[in-house]
Length: 225
Length: 135
Image 1: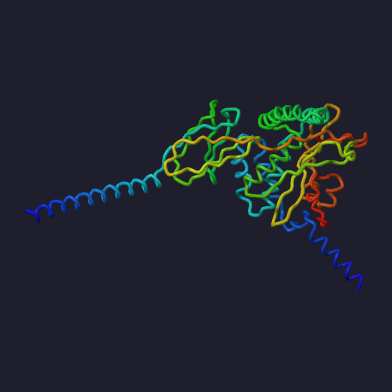
Image 2: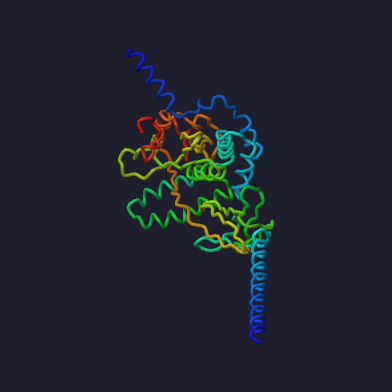
């Protein structure tokens, strides 16, 4: 009897966890092919780009997939923006007015760079994923928080250092991190190398939680919430 | 005499009511016309800091669009009718939707600042993970 109860709880947990295997019957080849077809498009007209990418696809998960894939394969991570953001946020964390002023002008710099050079830091990735998803009629949020390996994380005094997305598909929220899926920084020349990593696409929440801690706990999407 | 007078005033009443009817018919018809009438819509796109060059104005649900010029101005390339919706967007600002009214020929959408907060500090990783360094 005990075994049955455990089995029951176990299978319930599997059902609740929002993960990619929920869509195991869907082949993403079509979406990936469309993303490739629009490689190199610029960002000056997001509503149309979003429409072009998603118009031929029938399911929400495929529509999200094409946006995710396009962003990951077309937007470069910029090491210097990241360093500046990190440095200034730590330096100005006790001076809210200076932080506000800096953030205001930095935000402009970030969006100009994204628009003109398609280079950004994590917020730029999450912004595009959210905007393009919203334009395609999908509910999507930016989640801010901390990542593993950040030495001041546990002190509780540090500002968040990373952002990622939550996307609602078939009434259920899922997690993904386009910044980490997109590629890596080569520390020799601080250059970005595209290297798509599919594991962060709709990653199972308990696995995602190993490297991502959101400010708001509910966004861990773990079943306790 | 008395009867004639009444008749004249009755005629006048008739005339006035006819004129009122005709005028109201005319107003009614023209109102209906202006609702269905397509017209060229122009406008200027601003943020709180001034005009935005290169913002996109797109007719919702279509791929018909036009970017704004150096003064933030645009003339939409397709005539629009009442209840058409223009989506105005620019990277970093929240989209603005403008619904075309019965007589709209000029619009002035204003972007609100996007409340987004920029994060992206460098992760501190040990040497073995250095190549996986991500912004």
